[in-house]
Amino acid sequence: MTALLRYSKVSSRFIFNQPVVMRVDNQATAGEPTCDGSAAGQMYFNTDNSTLYFCDGTSWMSSANISNDSVTGAMLAPAVAGAGLVQDGSGNLDVNPGTGLEISGDTVAISAGGVGTTELADDGVTAAKLAADTAGSGIVQNGGTGALDINTDGTTLTVTGDTLGIADGGVDTTQLADGAVTYNKVDAFSIDTDLSDGATASTFASSVAVKNYVDSEIGALAAGLIYRGTLDASTNPDLQTQSTGDAYVDALGLLENYSKGDFFKITVDGTITDGTNNVAVKAGDMIIINKVVQHDSINVLTDVDVIDNSEAADLLSAGDLSSGQIFVGDGTTTPNPVSVTGDIALTSAGLTTIQDGAVDTSDIVGLASGAFILGTDGTTGGNTTATMSGDVVMDNTGATTIQANAIGSSEITDGSITLADLIDRNVTALIAPEYPNFTLHADGSNNRGTLESDNDATSASGGKNYYKWSSNRPGLNDYDLVFKWVVPENFQGFQGANPIQIDFKTETTSGADNALDFFLYDATGTSVALTGATGLTAAVADTFETHNLSFTDPFTSADAGKPGRSVFDSTRKVQDLHT
Image (cartoon, rainbow, N blue to C red; front, side):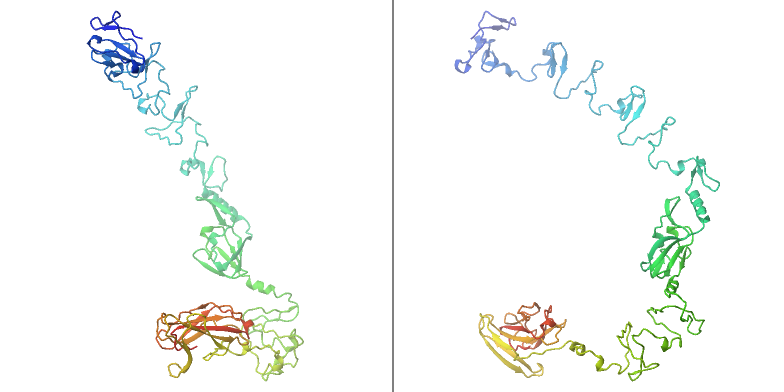
């Protein structure tokens, strides 16, 4: 469908008496109208792409081809909104540029209430923007009472240049930080330094006043013993660190102290200390604190009394002193006898001396069915000829001397003396070729060579008998010498150091030419792990040397009479072998 409309440049208006293309459908098939000098000023609307075209006398120009920024403010009527300005149906103008809006050369007038908290950016209002009487960050004014609250959210509020005025009663204990009130903040007239004339409810007692008062009151009390426990003096306990549970107050606070009459019992001999001085004490002693003293200032030389209870404890073990006689003296004078009832137990670990003549044979009892004294000839003699039945127990921790001829063969139980009690436990068994219980054994491969026995009569070898194995075959060839050794009677085990020694020599010192391996099996045929028993070569070629073998001994006395088994495995040119 087409309609012609002509735009007159002369009259600047559309003329309807000339045809203008109003719409073109299906331009792809119908084609667009002709644009030439005669059609200049005509326009048509293409419904395919919803675009309006103008004919400039040569070609059709799309309305979308209007260049950016070609429409200036001067071209707009005064009431027309520009880019980012949207005018609603009521005539209100909204600014929505999508980017920052910058206004220069004049101020922006905003109606009252036009800017709320939503329109203000966070932190957009700084201290410089506030009037002198306006509350700042962290300061909240109560709208009802006008009271000003400070809420700095955990940060410190610093007041400089002037003092902070607080209404009377405005600060109570809740607002005061713990420890904020120090000694010098308290009015001097409120501190009482002397409690001897009493105390009042309106003053504070100083720690010195409290200490002096407590010390005077405790000192006035009748001293009594207070048991504080035991001390192991072998560990050198420090009295400055022992706990008593008592305390007093001084300028440093609440401290623990000793009371007069505190005492400890010593359980093990040793010393006590105050960190500097030491005092020796014995088990059973009591150490008593003789005054009120602070723990960390106690002196064991002046503040502690040591009561030696060891003699008293020994005396109490004597029992009822009512019949019999004991003498207590210095060994030279004899005081009046003391009567006792019961037995006297001499338990001293050292020598106990009995006064000469204090005991005669009639006073000795309890030795089985009597007592006897052996004479120098081994027979009973001395002051009595009484015999003894039962066992004699010699319990002396030192040596016990038995008189010569005092013990005969009839006093020795049959079979009680073993071979181990009579002879040296270490016995050396020398086994030389040709070995007893000996055989040869080929292990099944590389056993080509010559084995012979011989003797080396030189003084250097000591005239050794030996087996000699030699082989000219390539590679290592070997042969086994096997013999059984019977574990002897009364056998206890091999000695710890060097239990087995082998004398041997090899033609060269190279293990690639010749080497010796030694194996040991117990009575059950189980292999014994040996140290230093394989790949043996002489340190000096063609020279006898002694080699030590070690192992964990599997043999015990239970193996006595049973055969063990040893194997020598000679490899290639192992020559002049001797064990």
